[in-house]
Every structure is written in structure tokens, then in C-alpha cells.
Length: 66
Image 1 (cartoon, helix red, strand yellow):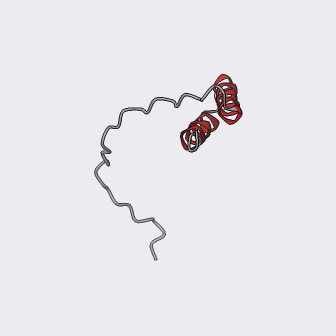
Image 2: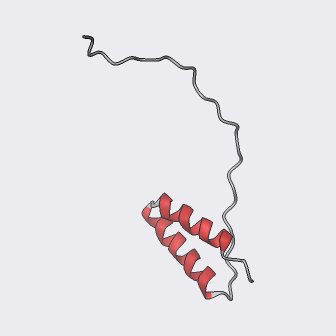
């Protein structure tokens, strides 16, 4: 019995280059937008890139109805 795992060699996967999206701008007279922008800045100062991304996604979705 062979306990050695099977290893497969595959070529590197090349993904198409996509330019980074610009961060959405909050609507200044909207309390929800202002709060999301505040959270994004707080996360940026702390190096929390996941929260920055989440805030950007929510800001992009939030303008519905503005």
C-alpha cells in the first residue's frame, strides 16, 4: 500500500487583468452614505481591507432611491 499522495503538475492559471474600481462617493446629505464612508475610513486607518471592501459594496448598492 502506498501512503504517498498523488501529485499533479498543472500550468499556472492566468486571469485577465481588470483595472481596479474607483471607490464610490457617498451622497453627502444621506445619513446612510455618510455612515458607510465613516466606517470605510475607520477601517482604512486600521488596515482592515475586508471592511473597506464591504463598505464599498454597500455604498454601490445603497444609492438606489437617491
